[in-house]
Amino acid sequence: MSRVDTATPWQRYICRACGLIYDEQHGDTDSGLAPGTRFADIPEDWQCPLCGVTKADFELFERPTVNTEAQSGKRNPYRPGSAAGVLVIGAGIAGWSIVEAIRRRDAAVEITLITACNGDVYHKPELSVAIARGLDQRALIRENGSEAARRLKVSLVANTIVSGISSAVKIVRSTRGSFPYCKLVLAQGAQSQVPENIPPQWCWRINHLSAWSGLQHRLAKQPARIAIIGAGMIGCELAENLRTAGHEVYLIFRGDTPLAKLLPPVAGQRFAELLSREGVHCVSNTVVESVELLPHDEHPSGDSNQGAYRLNLSHDKHLISNHIVAATGLAGDKRLALVAGLEYDKGIVVNPVSLQTSADDIYALGDCVSLAGAPCRFIAPIAEQAKVIASRICDGEELSYQHRAPVIRLKVQSCSLMWQGVPRSQGEWRLVSDMPNKLTMKQLLAGEIISTLELALAV
Image (cartoon, rainbow, N blue to C red; front, side, top):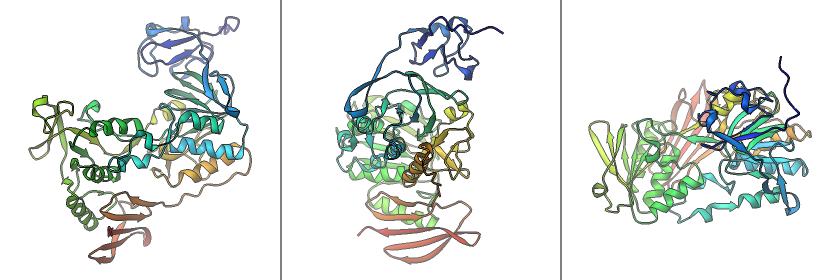
């Protein structure tokens, strides 16, 4: 067995294609490179774990000092790999919530927050209704990322992609280098899915602030024709919001009615009628089979900056639109979970009481987790999840999480639509009351009420 050379200083090498850094000290255990593997000893056909280029596309990298806003408002240089503490991946609602919860219990523990964005604090549910309200990116941001980091005494590592987690040695690898941890919290959320037959670059996905800002900027110029694919909660909220803002909106979905997974047919039909009254074109029982980019002189608005697409639909129909928005649901990113060897089932599987994953000292919360085989994609439980995880990380009172069925409200102006509990496909819907301005129903499973529904016209 060869001995690891520790006399020569460790070197780091950066991928010229994606910016990932290979650290000789930590190696890349996921691709078979043990800690201490010198770059010169790596096989020539080894591939970057993030973008797939070979060893030839790496070059020597000098370790930088990452300046972050830290304790007492002073500039505190944080060098990746300098100290192990609590490491949080993701700066959405879940990420900042766990940081806040930990700080309430412990003012001194080292916290590092890694995020692929710039870390600004905003409330994601507002994105689906913000355009009609005339809001822009500045209005949506509640706190600048660096200001939040200073206030909470956090080392914020922004615009950084995490490429892997080595749970055995407690190392997170990223495009800024390797970060050790004592406790790791995964809060990376879920990503918008894109229909397979549509090129991703032709499709807006309104799941984070930067993407929303791009669409908002384009739509601020003049009214446009917009095709929204998918009639779940986000698709329906966006459809009414964009129509209220003066755009022509087509809502395309596979089923007979919108919100088919949440609404029984009678309620779905009534809601579809309300959307139609608001001017939304509901295109039911329809699939987008392919999309073509059209010459500028063929698009509907006459503005060459708007773009034009021909959506070829089922039943030999087609639609020309300036913009395409994918609202076909969210999917968890299981790449990191699989690399770390974490159990995964429609999300990162966590203990329903402690919210610990299948690996020691790794917790998860928010959109990325799975409870009893079901993804937990609601805002309401996050605060309690963060409180429980913080109690276990900070060695104080170990609270227990008790998941409760959330109250779900659709953010539309045409009606008040609310669920108590999450409907299930196996449940049986029963009518409670049916009046011209209000519909109430309940869903039963094995004789027990698991969900109630109330649809009322807006006053």
